[in-house]
Length: 141
Length: 141
DNA sequence: GGCGGATGCTCAGCCTGCTGAGCGATCCTG
DNA sequence: CAGGATCGCTCAGCAGGCTGAGCATCCGCC
Image (cartoon, rainbow over all chains, first blue to last red; front, side, top):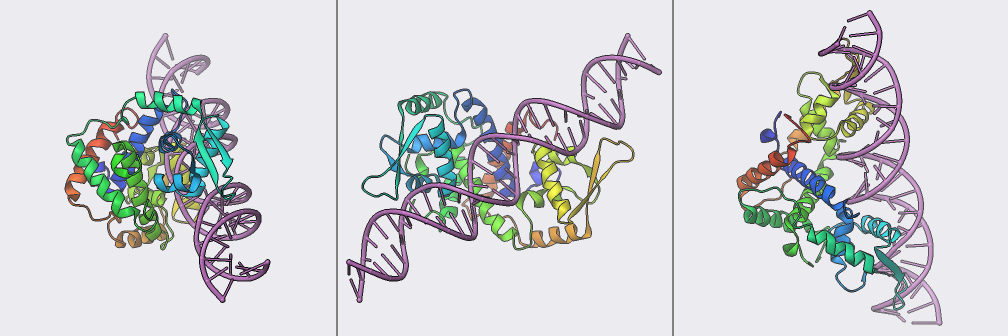
């Protein structure tokens, strides 16, 4: 129990994710973006999308996504305006500044995953986990 | 970019961790414990340890561990008392209630990782990530 | 046309990570 | 033995997950 070798796999997964995320966040902050902000900006593609839509795509709750977007808006990276066609919706779009940031962040290269013996296998296994654990909470995302 | 297949591996890792953690947390809350609390209780072994020591073993910052322990103490799962030998330290130990909870949590079976094609490979790869990403931040832990 | 359910969002609040600042206790060194 | 560095901890505050409650809008059906 003293060393990671003895940890259950779930704990290993959380820890690995946290450590990698931390390393990545350090680089990101040089361009003034957070992990969550980058994902939102990325998912925004080139058109406007609703918050619920973005949340589902990112596999987070609406409230979480809304707060991230609110922060991005405060910093001038996205705009949020009510949809004329459906007054319940808020349409989010990147500002030019947001697009520039995204570009820069992407130029920072793939996400700082430390070198691992079989990256492709890791991807495959993680995809299995995500797909099988998304069920129910994020239907048809 | 729309579906997990197109995500960078780092994002996949975070998402997988979050989804698995969520599932596990749901079970844990039936015994009145959180993810972080379980880890602390687990690392506590059978003897008293200092907060710094626990934090390093869990790969989290001292402040994070201290807060988790403070919560566990409030719920009567651990005790915290200053070390007589070194008045800077706080020695943490499980209470009988804490030990009972840990037992129950462990009876809940391994950590809810969804079935995956090659669990052993996943473990190995995650271990590689943890070991290589722990460097610096958690020396000799 | 109107009522009820579904949908999209906000507000409030909790837990877990993190950083930075500050403080007493200990230890080492001159 | 005194002073400075280090160590262990607390306090304050931020970001990112989550839940639950509540509100407005829209849609579908009678």
